[in-house]
Image (cartoon, rainbow, N blue to C red):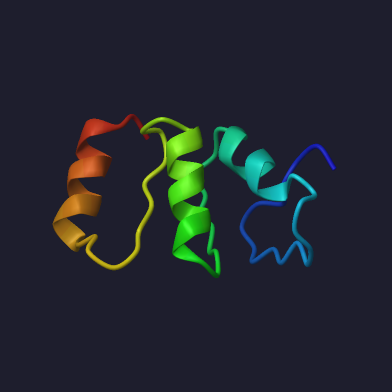
Length: 72
């Protein structure tokens, strides 16, 4: 797979296949849901500020600030 489908809910069904990385690198606005905060934090670190991880302690203001300071 070289592209993630758009305008849909896509359940890749397995881990380690590169689907999350593909979605993060595709340049399209994407919401990715992960089962563990550690996974979210890992992707945030790997992508050096280009990804906003939303979990406990992240509020609407944080999301709005991120949107204002990052090109959409």
